[in-house]
Image (spheres, rainbow, N blue to C red):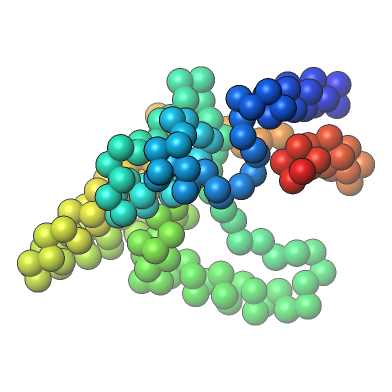
Length: 183
């Protein structure tokens, strides 16, 4: 907690000095597109979308030399859920490769279903056969993205954030950082 408070003081100093405009907001996308930002902590899927799909070729996702947080979302079932079987069935549905590829092509985030890469490549080949070259190129670039399909060397440079193990620890963490990120 002492280190958390030290980090929080540093984050507040950055924000209050104007070095950092704000924390935890999607507003960075508009500023990036307009050229008002030269650097930001961004979601890889946002950068992948705007760079490859929306034509902002001046945007690039730079992986920090010292490593980064591991970026993936998870489906979870809360303890004591009313219908855990239904939740598991929904998860099974979304993890079917033919469904997961649609989600992956839409959200452009790391997929827990490895088969999606080959399916995106098949979609790219199909688009090329149909003479949709621009679409095919975007799908190919999506499948080739090291941020969507990282190799083990890149994954080895990532780590998960601090694991808060007790309710008291979570409450203390939140009391320190939520006022910064959520104002």
